[in-house]
Image 1 (cartoon, rainbow, N blue to C red):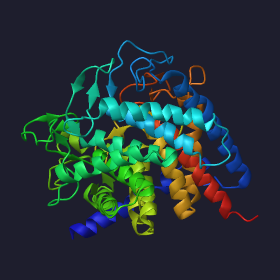
Image 2 (tube, rainbow, N blue to C red):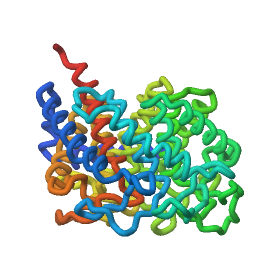
Image 3 (cartoon, rainbow, N blue to C red):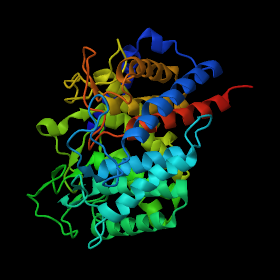
Length: 445
């Protein structure tokens, strides 16, 4: 009976999807000319608003790595600690743009992009890597002389693997591939949970397991997070694409299973973030909130992971529709486009700012759903959200994207910090360009 109620609840959410779409979304259609217009806009934003901004500002010639703390006008702030998450994300970004397989984009010389990536690779290898115990430190001081947070968290390790794998793909640097292999083996030895599946997340600097009551960098040390496993899946997906091994495939397959089952609350048609080691959900208070951005990101990253495993994502289509229906019902701004931050289960969004990364992930996910289903409603959501981003989120004066836009349309937030880099929005431009290319190839000549 419970399974029937869960199924009916999910179907009910999907039925509500049509009601949550404005007429502009219902009439959106795909054509070669429309796709060309979008690609032109995406190209320009990638080149001029994102890439050039970070090439001009992020390369830290004095202390190494990337300077990530930038105010609303794009100027460096006094605080400039360096965390593995955004250091690795910038390594990934410059490497991914240097590969430039997304077609028709006029970019700086490839050597310049590879040099920007090499700058980050050498910093990760020489400074952020723990040469005694292995793995990457969480945080170091601005001068790169002192480790501020030496613990090993799988969220940070996931982005390190992601950046190293992409740098190897772009540059062919075998030392980067070798360090990525060392990291994968460390994760297997210390963090993989063979009994319950997935990975335990927080460790002492020497990879010892902390006491259960220890507070980790992202919450209690014994928790497992949907968010961490989402990015482990993306990292292993890139690792399999860069250097396929039996271990890499096994772990990627396991992470696909987790992200499509364990983190999904079927009675809601949505995902939650916090879990005990055995995947029992932690739903008390704020722990049960729904993050629309993570649910939509999960959709397209699952598709990407399956693609790199060489298999179809169509068996997951009902799940994808359910995640989309929930986010549209509770988190979408039908009037202006774009998605709010988060909300309590089965309630309208209560955090109603529009965060830069949520819009970026929604753009890719919407086009992914259109590619899978040919349902033009998803194309309409892409169009309306992209229009919101272009007119309200992109800073045409100082470059980059505002961190937040309030419900009343007021932008705020710095352009860079230890959680904000060129990763979400830069990646969204690249992925959308690739999807549009594939869609154009389906059109009759």
